Length: 149
Image 1 (cartoon, helix red, strand yellow):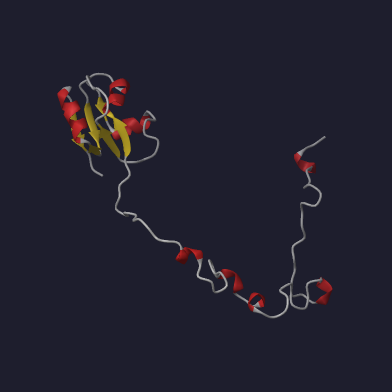
Image 2: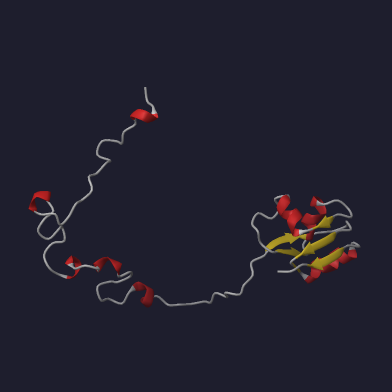
């Protein structure tokens, strides 16, 4: 019967640790598995990331393009048409409620966009709004309030 007490690794899966520099009797004496002389036999050879033997490394050969704006703010986008289906007339829509309902998956600032129809009077509190979203919310008799970042 197989149980946790008698499980063993597959044959050949378990290897003995290589012990180097402990004399001829260890089987790894002499040059300690590093071969004779040269760059790779020396200490500290492993840490040269991207080194290609003196050839210009690939990271310097490929062209660099583009720009990453470190001040960019990523928003979770939500359309006014979705608010129409999710909330009842006169409801208050906040970022906390959207997170609670699972509409916003990650803890990101929320931006309301203007795609879709809105006929319900809603008080929407979000981090950002598009101009068309504000227009549609106000046209339905609602209120669009910007909260902090």
